[in-house]
Image 1 (tube, rainbow, N blue to C red):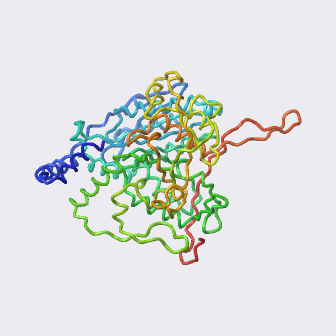
Image 2: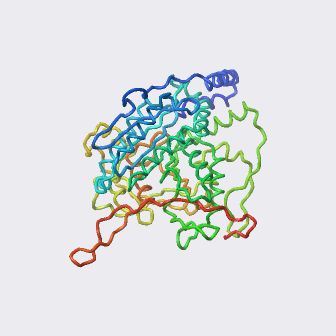
Length: 497
């Protein structure tokens, strides 16, 4: 995704690139506002928007237009999706919002279907009689199917994603689907967003969390996973700062403790939102800042406000105040002031059980945040071979490796030292797990997502009485934690360090 624009920038910077630059800017301006393809129209009479409804799992699509409205004027699509969830016992609901260069007709639908297939076949899901339901949120992420030239649709697609996030139908769909799932016991709702879809999830989550702050109302999701989001770090900085004003991290108990002294502390390993950022993602690490800089230049944005870096120094004094440009032109996972966790290799014994790492990580609580991958880099066997119900042996398990999720300030003190620990994880991920911008459906990232899920909803041992003796029953998932953010403490009071 980043190669064409990277080559363009190289030419732009060359002595003879002036004419090319002017032409490129004109093309960019035209393409940024080009018309999008018409909706796929899965709605209307019948159940065309239900792509799968069988014993393994269920899948429906829900399409949004250029301005974030439902594209189906009959609202049959959203009704079909809601009814699909309502009639499912013990639903494990996964809502996925795709990114740039995708829509409801792209191969990303099949990859998501493959992920759901893989998830539904795990021992943990089968043992607990969970039923996987996936809802694919489609939007016009690809407005021009011409290679290289469609790179310049960056600005237009970013604006569309921002409109979808700010307008109401997308959040309305999430609310209705979550409400339908919670009509059933043992339900669990996961939001996943990638690229510009990550932008949509991030803004939906951030605004919802802040709106519900201080109210005894559970957000309409249990876990939000944001993968390589193509969003600026402005909102992320605000959310991190807001969470830092609500909680302080207790290193002894490893909990986020409410500053008002009245709420319930949160386990460090149970964040409300997790962002996973590939460390070699050229799209968000190179293309996004270059595109944002060009957009600022064209828009005449030359002056920047000064904003505080979230957190406090070791002596309790506030961190530095810097230009907001440092956050506007980078994504959260590429911002040195926000990254708070990183994944590093660690020596650990190979598991003695488990068909592959995805199955193993979902079946075991990750002690000290240690987890495993078992596939070669770039392997997408789960997303590809299994999407049509293929055999589980299609997923390779020949390259077992162990990893640990660590505080980024310990991994790289010079770059990330002092970054705050809040229940919003921004995690740097090695390329062996997520390779570049589009590697989110790799078998290894599926293992990482299973680990995040298991951290958030750990297994417990239930004591029962059998023939007069107390024994431990098989492991079962503990109830999903009802995250309710505490009220903001009086800012005039002395803060807990």
